[in-house]
Length: 206
Image (tube, rainbow, N blue to C red; front, top):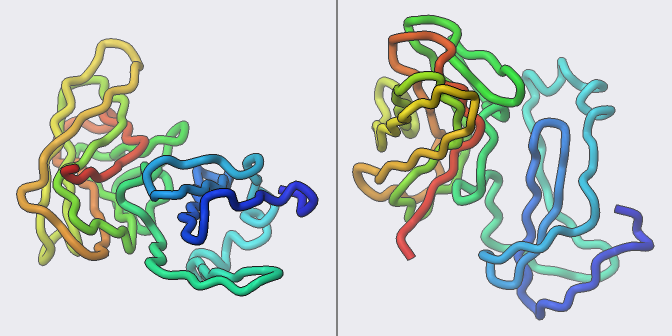
């Protein structure tokens, strides 16, 4: 967004800010209550930056910071990854036995596979929802912290479709989750490339 088109705050002293990344596209949002979000400016492409640092990002990781320009501002309740906003599966931090196909992730082996999204804020989460394309019925397991020593919090069952239509499936968590956790999505052993996961998002009771 050009500085001459800077957004003017009309929401009061407290403003929620959110930055969403979907592949190479970045989009900013603001809110007065953290529930209803308003887009700020147009999407920004990170293609040039991503091309310039493919090797560095593989071991350095992502550095995140906040600053205010022109006047003082206090920031609190900073969250790197909000579990209550859709998390693109292709933005995984670690993986095994999966690949990205057309902005979705699927397993590459009949032995299953998994992906991990690091540092997701799940304060008070009681449910989970996934957007996926499933050629046949199947299931995805959702774990936190670790696949061996962590905890399975949900199993999401997908009905499957005869066409390539997208399906949204939900499941209640076995018990509510608080704090920030690494989130794992696991494809159990079975057929390969039948479930193409696009997004995962957590929910909580109102």
